[in-house]
Image (spheres, rainbow, N blue to C red):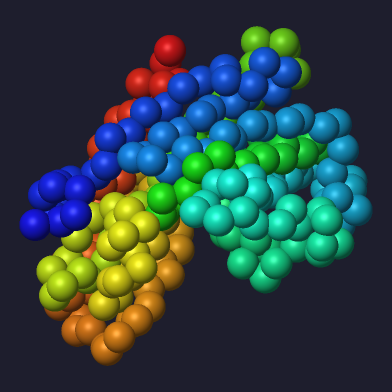
Length: 238
């Protein structure tokens, strides 16, 4: 039995609350169990120097955790004067994941930044950030269409992410902190609604795991993201 009482293939309770940030062009508060992340999309009419005069847009992300998002207070990275390697790695992952489902040529020369701020962390914060950020991005694009800035929403699909792991020898879906901290192996899967693989991060924590075990984790991830894609569609539809 999992600590949460969930079945091996069960997600935590998921909710996507849109328009949570009043001023952002698109926003979503995603809750996955006790993990909560606020994702807000901001539009700028400029692109990074390497994209000037290319006719292409840019989608990027920033990620951070509030000081008491975890059991003990963490220092604000701004106070330290630099971001941690973990923060940089996660925000690059979020940006890559979103760009995988955006027609940047159809955007024209504009940039959208997704700010993903972790309010409460109980495992899977990067996965929740990707899933919620897609909703915020989609709403921002819809806002730009409504304002006649864009003719169509330049999304070519959905992207969502979920964690899986081997805990006590059993493959399970959507690890919370208790499971993640004691897992034999854990993985983060970023998938598209058409079945495409965007990124997989998998690590053996205690001992190596087999190809069959990895296949089981992938099957669990597909089960989880199928439910997340449906939740995204409902959130965007209002």
